[in-house]
Structure formats: structure tokens, C-alpha cells
Image (cartoon, rainbow, N blue to C red; front, side, top):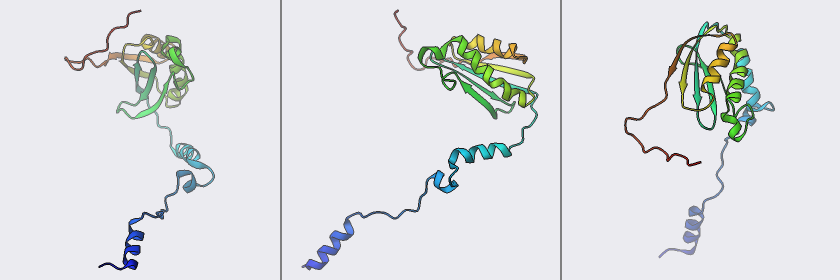
Length: 164
């Protein structure tokens, strides 16, 4: 038979106690500045390289327009979207919002020395053409425009069309 003291020890062992962990949050590790100051410090040390030709990947959906600027290898240099600019709801998908998205990216593109750009369009939203026009209007030479919208070969059933 088991003694009373043995039973109490067994009960104590089975009850989970507080774990002693030494995990600190990112802000505690970096000090008072926090994680955001650490990230900005990292970007200051990066030297800007000169890229004459880049790529603009424009994803235009029914709800938003996203533009990503990359080098020819596909490394992201900068990005922006109409939601990031502060547009809400249906205003995000307007052609005006798409032109402003490109307008906000122009200074960073100019800082890389970019002059020529290849455009890749994805999606069927309203901001497709206006984003390309904004690129051309801001002094970039558009070398090619390619539509890379994914088209299924009888994949998933599409959404039902809206009846307005």
C-alpha cells in the first residue's frame, strides 16, 4: 500500500506550476528604442545601389490596388497599396487611388536611379491602366507591359456574378 506522504508527493508532481522562462520581447531586448527603431537603424546602414531598369508588379483587385517595385532579379525595393495610403472601403479600388499609390513610390524609385521599367499586371480591378499611366506620366520609360493574371484550366468553381 501507498503511504499518505507518497500520495501527497505524487499530487504535487502532477500539478503544473509556473514555468520559469527567460523569454523577453523584442522591445525589451533592444532597449528603450523598441523594434521599430531597430528596423529603421538597419535601413540607414544599407547603401542604395544604382538600378537603371526595374519591374513594377501591379496587382489590381476589386477591393484594392497594390504596387511592388523590384529589381530585375525580383528583389523587392519598395511597395505601396491604396489601403496603406489611408483609403477605406470602395475608395481603395478607384483609379485615382491607384495613381496616388504610384505617385508615393516615385521618390524611392528615383533614389535608386531607375529610368526604365517593365510592368506586370495581375487582376482585373479598376486601377490597372491608371497605375501604368501614372508610371509613364512621372517620367519612367515603360519598356513592356505584360498581363500575368492567373487563369485556371478548369480549377475551382468561380464566384457567382453579382446581380445589381
